[in-house]
Length: 285
Image 1 (tube, rainbow, N blue to C red):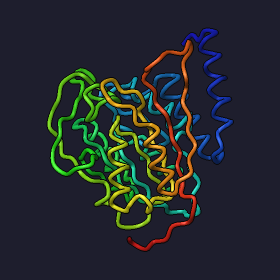
Image 2 (image 1 turned 90 degrees about the horizontal axis):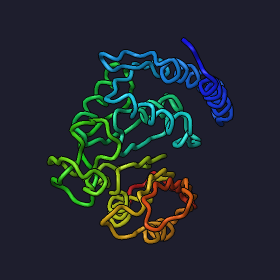
Image 3 (image 1 turned 120 degrees about the vertical axis):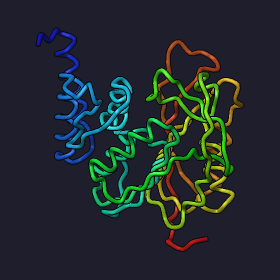
């Protein structure tokens, strides 16, 4: 294998970034070896679409999407959070094939995880990954989260079943559509949630607003929410979303990569980390 100057630079830049992660040396070692084998040397089972990620045989749909998920979740450490518990209760909204579930299990092996994924093909991979890798205390639901129970149109790309833009918003995926079950997240929250991860392609305002109106939002201690800003044909709701968090007693931090030159109405992913300003109890409202 011949490695050019760009490959050498990529190797050392990635190893440097991994060394800077604020996680244990053991986790860094697993991330380093997984990246080097699967995404640098491109060693994986291409026929069955299975890659060895940190000792788990991860079934995937598209190698490019797998690489993107690994970069966001493992290299950028986007969902890293600190818990006082060794066994935090985590809700993962928009689990896709389960890379975020694997990350949480690496971070807190004793955690209990409730996972939601409405995509037919992604959910099949998620189920296989949970079962085949014996990720204990993980329950998955094949449903889209919304502000109402029932069914809704789900927009997907038949040529890329692993696309990360699929969801209930047509503007995010103006391709094919199928009907999926929709559920209220509030009905699943019966105890304190230590961490909520949400990446549901534009439905986050509806879900968080319903959680607040049901009184369940205060049951969540910490959240990492991918907010989808300036979706075409959708009204701007960012200020209302942040005010909703503030009124519910959450502090927050937000970050996004802002492209240059500046342009108006450009779509933007904004990662919002929100946290309860005061300690919550296990008492159900």
